[in-house]
Image (cartoon, rainbow, N blue to C red; front, side, top):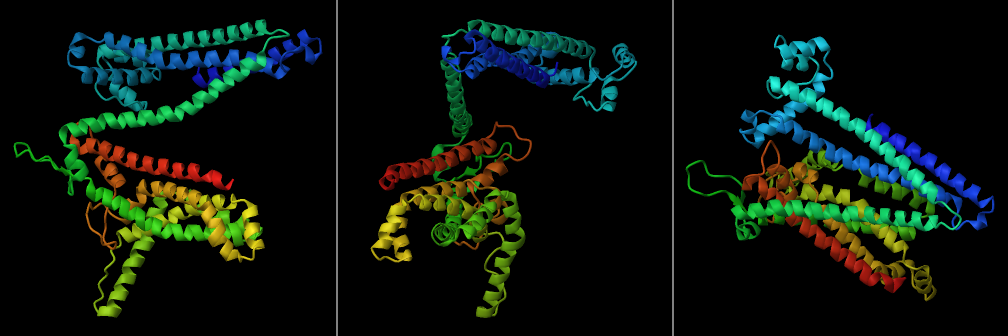
Length: 494
């Protein structure tokens, strides 16, 4: 039976259990609900939980463990001539066998018999069915594929029976426990609490997993390249010497990439912060409800535009515009019509990234400004201050910690941007201060180092993990500092 269909039947069983538990609680109370410890809905939910959750747990574990067990059985059935060639050959043979097993199900009995007898080419037959094989089919592979199908079918049948049996037994057990003084509400709330804890733990465990995977590969990188040359190097040239040449395995200096990342983020923030902050002040303090209700959603549409679209905008419109403007200005001043702003430059990337960051700054700042107590506004206006004086001397100082936190969160968003930089600032790892020339960032080089069919065995690819963990630490500290500022000063104005 299909896994989706099994889950559907489990949910139906849970619904039946809910109705049964609710009905039983009503029947034992004799229609007098005050005699029950909990409301009937809790009794029904209790039965539904016992019918659904154990079944889903068993289903999840079975779906993970059964393929591993079946693969081990099929792998052990291979001839010694295959097993002796190493794990790579064994896994390739196993993958071909699995593909063959799926294709065999599409064959007729005559086609399968012809393949077994050698009168038909199984690889060509399966290719005609849309199932390509990575290598030629050997006779032992056909037998292994048939065994794989048989074991998979048996496993699925047993899984269906076991899952349904556990669901029915769980529902029966829960129904038998229902009584007048049974604390169904406490049991249900305990399960809900466990679910909330599990949901909150997923984010933490995901973060730990990400950091762990990056740290393991980063450690391998620093075994080949000294940490000092990576963190303090000023040249990015991850090329390797030819075979037999001197052992100069490229240069992996982080400084040019980090400088480009911070430089482009700085230009973006210099553009986004004034525009976004002024927009937030206008919408929070000056705009009428109609204008605010229209302008704020339109402004926040910018946050939903994919970054690759911003990259196209920079490549096609902003970059050529700045280049042509610089050509005209240079011609008017010096008479030499040569552009001094490159189409791909720090300025182009910073401006377009700033446009992307405007809704983040304006939306967060607007929410923070509107949370300033109304009494502070009224008190300032009552003492004779104008609206602009109230904004400058009362509202903005009160909202400043939250605004600073919002700007730091926005800065971490700018540091991690990739697509805009690829198209608007280029890929040249340069260490310079001219905003009219191209530079690149850490994220761009991570993409470059992991592009193509590569193995994580050389410093050229492992350096991407070192760059990733560095960027992760930078954004993590920005976020932590932003949250610290918000939490430290927020209660002064509540």
